[in-house]
Image 1 (cartoon, rainbow, N blue to C red):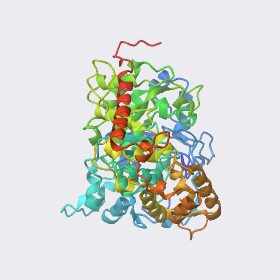
Image 2 (cartoon, helix red, strand yellow):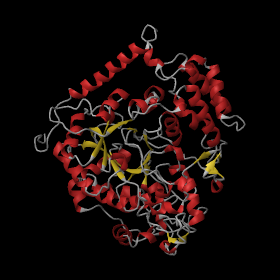
Image 3 (cartoon, helix red, strand yellow):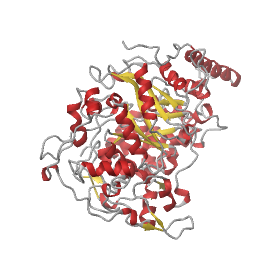
Image 4 (cartoon, rainbow, N blue to C red):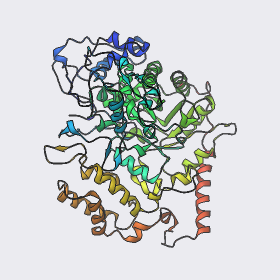
Length: 608
C-alpha cells in the first residue's frame, strides 16, 4: 500500500459531487459528507467497480489557463482512471524534497495501536482520545452514509458548561473546550522567524522530534500528506500520518491537493490533532504531483482555484490558520506581475496567523518551477534564485507576511533576515518575517540548529538538550525506546517504526567530526544484526555504535560552538576572537543581502 494515497477505496463514491460542494461552501451539508465511524471502526468501502461515478472536470477557467493539464484532472480527483482497478497510481511528494513516497508497511495488530501517552511520550492523539471520552460518537468515517447528523452529538466540556453541541465540521477552535486545558493548542506561538521546510522522507515525526530537542522555537513542517490519504484512512491508522509529540509545537501540517471538497475534509480529519497551522503545497514540481496529480506547483496556474481551496480549508481547520508555500512562478507563468496577482488573489481568502503578527503568511521558494524538462532535483538548483522578488512582495503587500526559502544554509543569513538587516534597495522599508531552511537542516542538524534559539530568536539560552550531543542522544534515545514498534510489526518481523527509521535522523549528527564515517558504518552493521531484535533498546544501540565507531567523549560532550571556534590549523579561538569572528560572519551575510538587485515594482518588469 502506498503512503501517498491509501487504496482502501478507489473513488470518492461517498456522495454526489453537488451535495459535497454545497456542504463545503454553505456549511450546511458538510456534516453528512464527512460522517461515519469511531476510533475502533472498521471502514466499509466501495470500489470504483461497484459504482458508476461520473467524471468531473476542472472549470473552464482552469482549462483555458492550463489546457495541457486539463486532461489530467481526473487523475488527481480519482487517482484511478480504469474502472475496476483497485491500485492507487500516485505516490505523492513534498515541497522541498519531491519524489516517490515509499510504501507504508502493513502491520499486524493495527486495530489495537497504543495512542495518547506511549512509553512516557505524550502524543497529539491524546486530544483524539479526549474527544472520544467527552464527545462520544464525534467521529464518523468520511465514506459512510446515512449516519446521524453529528451536530446533534452532545458532550460535557471543561469550561463549566453542562452540555454543549460539538461542531463536527471543525469550523472554529471551540472543539478544544472538549479536551483538558493542558492539551489545548498553544494560543501564542513564537514568530515564524525560522522554520524547517517540508521534505518527503526527511521531516518525519522522528526527525522533527530531534529538531525540537535542539531548538524549542523553530517551526516544524511535516511531510506533505495528500488529501486523498486522509480521506481514505480511519482511526487509529490516521496516527501514522498525523500524530506527533505534544512538545513538537509549533508545528504545521502540509497538505497536497487541488479539490476544495477533499481538502476541506482532510482539514477536518486533521483538526483534532491540533496542529498550529495547516499549509497548502503550491510549489512541488514533481511529475507525480504537478503533472498527473495536478496539484503542487501546477496550482500556480490558477490563483482562483487556490483561493477556493484556501477558503474551504479555513472553514474546516479547527481554528488553525491556513498558509501557502509556493514558488515565484511556473513555466511561462513566471513574471513578477503574475506572482503579485497570485498573492493578491489567494490572500483575500486567508486569515491572519498568530505567528505572523496576525497577517496571512506565505513561504516563498525564490525559484520558478519548470514542470517540463527538469527533474525535481534540478528544480531545486537550476532555476536562478531571485530573493529580491520576495523582498519586492513584502513592499507590495505590507499586510502579508513572507518567509524566504531556497539556498539558505546558515543561521547568519537567517538571523539577518529575522532582524531586518541587509535589505536590498534604498527604498525597501519593510522586512521579511523569516527564513525557511530545507535540506541543510538534515545535512548538518547539530551545526545549524543547536544555537538557533539564541542566534535567531534572541533567547537567553538554548535548550538543555542542545548543550552537548551526549545530552541530545540520551533524550532522543528515550524517545526511540518509547516509540519503536508503536504501529505494530510487519509480516517480515520488523517493528514499525523500526530501529532504522528511528536512527535515520542521526546519520549526519557528527558531520565534520573525526570518525563520523566509521560510526555510520558501525551503525549500519548493528542494524543488520539487531534490526529485528526486540530485546535491543535503541538507546543502547546508539551508544554501543558510538563506542565501536570511535566517537570520543570529547566530541560527545563538546558544546555546539566548539566546531565554529576551531581554526583550520586546529587551534581553538578565544572568546573575544570568536565574538569578532561571529560578527564578521553576520556582517558578510548582511552585505550579501544588501547587494541583491533592487526589488522590482509591480508593472515595471515586462513578460519575456
